[in-house]
Amino acid sequence: MGVIKRQTIKGSIYSYLGVAIGFIYTLISLKLLTPAQIGLTAILMAVSAMYAQFSTLGFTKVTERMFPYFRDKDKNHNGFLFISIAVGLIGFIISVVTFFLLKPSIIENNLEKSPLLVEYIWYLIPLIFFRMLFMMMDTYNKMLFDSTTGSILNDFVFRVGTLSLLGAFFMNWINFSQFVFGYSVFICFPAVYLAGLLMYRKQFSLQPKLDFVQTPLRKEMISLSVFGLIGGLSAVALKQIDTIFLNSYSGLSMVGIYNVSFTFGTIILVPSVALGKISSTFIADAWKDKDMKTIDDIYYKSSINQLFAALLLFILMVTNFHNIFKILPSQYAGGEWVIVLIALSNLIVASTGVSVQIIGTSHKFKILTYSSIILVALSAVFYMIFIPLWGIIGAAFVSLLSVSFASILRIFYLNQNMKLFPYRITHLKCLAIGLLAFAIGKVLPIQDNFLIDLIFRCSAISVVYIGLCYWFDISTEMTTIGNKLIILLKTRWGQLFK
Image (cartoon, rainbow, N blue to C red):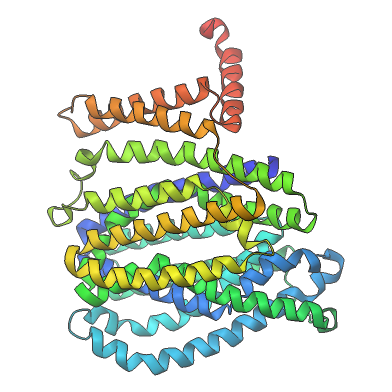
């Protein structure tokens, strides 16, 4: 877990810096951009993500599972990157053809309620290409034991760039059209940078070595790619379908309001993303070596560590609603339940640890595909029912239902088929401590000054929660960090802690 811990911490630091910058961006954008303009950036991200995922033709799953068999630095990993890029280009061509076929229908359906989407629809083509390219190369780079660069580019550099654009827009140096162009450039930039980094490291070789891919290996790769395509599309659809349905029923303005509330709810999932990226590499190698002990260890530790971090963030968020909505414009009022439902769904996901990565890199990976197809179909039906009834709260409610069902299904499957189970009595202790910290946060009197109340409330909750988790040794990794910190403080300040 040493490398995993280091890269997870590093990735999480940049991710949280990105979250902080993204939070500032969100606050400023609420003052400078209309809900429809915010909704435009959200829908461009959502639609391009789905098309880009399709463009990979599921080959990222092949990379995650089969790259250990190609790994050979002296032989440029037996031409693996050439195959990956070639597959991506084929998928992109298919996506562009599909886009042109669907474009008239998209324009007709959005001409009145989402005119901005019609105006900027052509931006989707470069966004699809560069996001596809980034997904391919980031997965490849991750398998070379570098999971942090992609996270830094996506979570930090992108947000710094878009915040800079918002500053330029505020200063009237650029208009909204130039802002959208710059926003798209920063979406594309990570792929360009990652390609350059791989070239600099002499790990970017497009020299083919097709003779290495013998018939049995080729069949396995095709099978993985097919299921990866279906599973990947389903996974992206589960994340983006709410935005697409909201735009369909309510237009870009409602998408913008939902997207702002959704952003708050997703903050608690940042450590899970960083951990999942690096863990899958080690889990894939462990499967190759049939090392179930390592997989079980990663599963448990990822579960408790993610629950520890996510639960604290969840408590801090729900006990500070009165502060959060002081800084949001009045038109965003009523988004509390969206934040609660999305945050709760992400808390559930965090508690399941790296269950997705364990199944996805195992010989039972197809179960993810089957379950995702069912979930997408059910979610689509429920979105069509609950969005017209409850609007953005309906969308968040369906997200919670789908995520909860998927998480329970994964836990049950791993326990029944692989004898793996992430939860221990320690998880109950963590929840009990969290409940106590939540109660303290709710009973504290509200201060008149917004900043004083925020600092006071967050500090009190954090001291109680982290202190008790350290005392009861909830997370071995966090306890180790705490011990090192105490030793450092004792060294610096002598007898202060005696």
